[in-house]
Length: 384
Image (cartoon, helix red, strand yellow):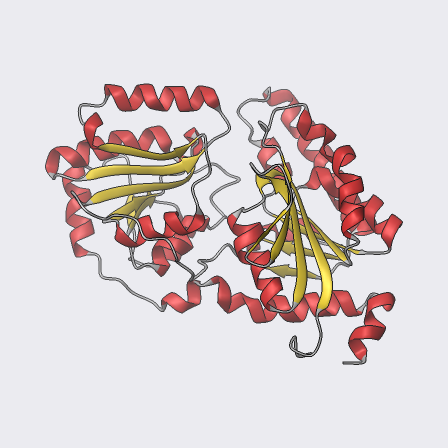
């Protein structure tokens, strides 16, 4: 393995259409890890800034924030192809499959390498999307999977996966791949006030199938047994959902004990970690849908790293992950029962095994292999 102190490694440019430029996985984990390994790193993504800027050594090229259903989403590739080319990156990392054609163009135009960072299984999402008519889900899911596999086989030099359960999507494809789970990044510079009544916590995307409405009911029942605030820290593009959430909070008998952080703005990564480290327990009441139950949500790693219990649905994959450290909620669980079980939780395991940093050596070797296989860059690297 080459020493990053000897020479600056090649330039990596991350491209994302739906995520903020300072996204936890894209910026805080991947981009910052690559910067520390000696790469020059740029991120193109949604940001409030009107001009490019430096963020902890990473170049940020902003795009004005927009709703995921906006027509601007579909013009992203056209608008940013030129900006991406101007970066003259040696490696482009695509974070959503709809940008794969743009990646193919950049690869052809600049002889750069192309990596696809697979955050989700979009074909599975389409198969179980409640907003689509049931008769079209299978057609769209199959079509999307065919497109994705074609793009990977023809255009992509490497695939990183956020979940192990995505590996079957690559079956039969000869492409270097690496599982990089969304584990906890052990960096915390944010210090929030922890004064006041102890609190239960919801973090992450604000969404119905992420258990947003369900947790309100469970918390209200727990609140009747024991004083405890509820803190909801998350973001949503959906203005209708945010309005419904505000209405639901106002109707709660304990509305003055509910705090919403974020809503229509992203919550800083470090602030979320601080909130987790100081909570009594967290909520992870995901709807146990077929495309979710094999995944390990990011918050599972975060809560387990902080040695904080999580209340989650009784799903075998998740029960195995927690191994007694969380609370497997069932429809017959009462507020009193949940408190009794929380009182009995004893933190277990080695937190360092849940850290993002434990995966960085594998990322280093994998990235080096992809870059060295590029003859234009390989000659430089082989001489180190």
